[in-house]
Length: 326
Image (cartoon, rainbow, N blue to C red; front, side, top):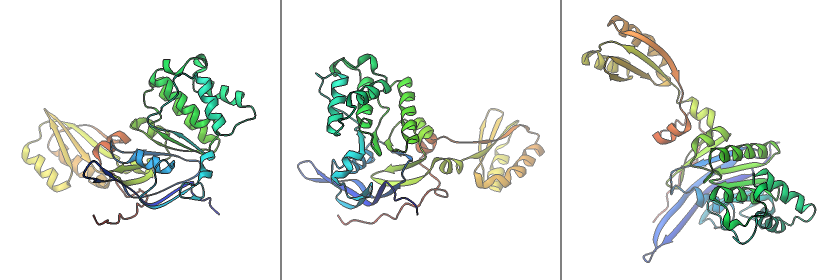
């Protein structure tokens, strides 16, 4: 019997009414999602897409307007989830007069840690690379150092589920690498990590699955390998003169796209057009063009996200959005 997903959302929505005229803003609309235990799940989307609102509902900071949420086997956000949940908000606020050790010891007390608390706190200060600053006040910390403290407080209670909102924000490349290693370590010991990020190369490197949210709605959910593999394409590069008539004939006959620059000709084949490569190749050779190479090119998550055109052939099904009356 398979384990119950650690996160189950069904048609989750959140509506705000803002301003003097109480303007309606549908921040999240009919969002459905399952996250399995032990996986690293990345939530990506443009600014204002609903990522932080979704995370705030998951952590119980705000209540959904409608829909169902099951977290760690509890319906809705049950208070019993708190001890099993670690959370790093996008923007953190700390007592600046406290030292790194004092603030983390404070959070450990909130988690109810009594036995070996000093050892646990010291371990996490070292693990996030702040051993040299354990007795420095937070008011003297840089943004990157504060982000490391935030990661330590999210993990000090040994949670089952770790929710991180932009965990690599404000970090230099070395810091981003350290965070990535820490996330992988958490997965190895059985923790589930759910995080949002604008740093798409890190999402691509870390995540088992991703969800793309736009305008408050889940656009696509799937395994990264499956989503990216469907966007692989074949590229044929040649040298020589290609007349406008021949260019138009190739496009009409084979349905491919062509770029020309000087005497360079590049033909792009979509995955489903691979059977037409030989025909285009023969056509170009018959018209005295020199073939330089025919290669298969991949695509990364950043390019796929920027284009905003996700193939759903290997994506997981996203339930049909229901319509709400205004």
